[in-house]
Image (cartoon, rainbow, N blue to C red; front, side, top):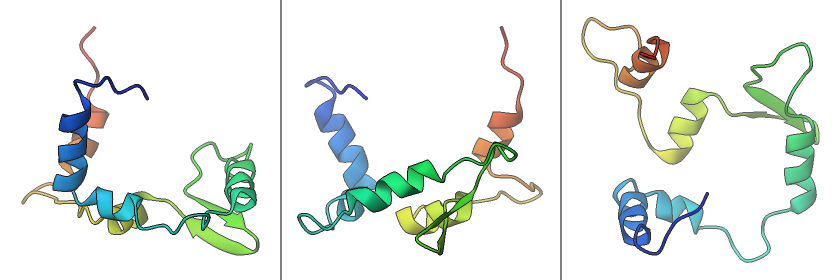
Length: 98
């Protein structure tokens, strides 16, 4: 992702508005184990199931489905009255106008 210097303030404000800056900066220096991250990505996709929503890392199941990610990022999914899907999910199902 490339962010030009003119876009940085807008991007930073959006991170702060969503309170994602707290999540993204709460790791201690050196607390991310690169070997575990590599194992996560190595086990990410099963050739039989192209839409993986969970992966095993060191014997532990790591979920990264919509609900888990929204809980981690503190961004609840809001489903409007009379709807069964969120606004983004409904938009994603639309066929784009060529």
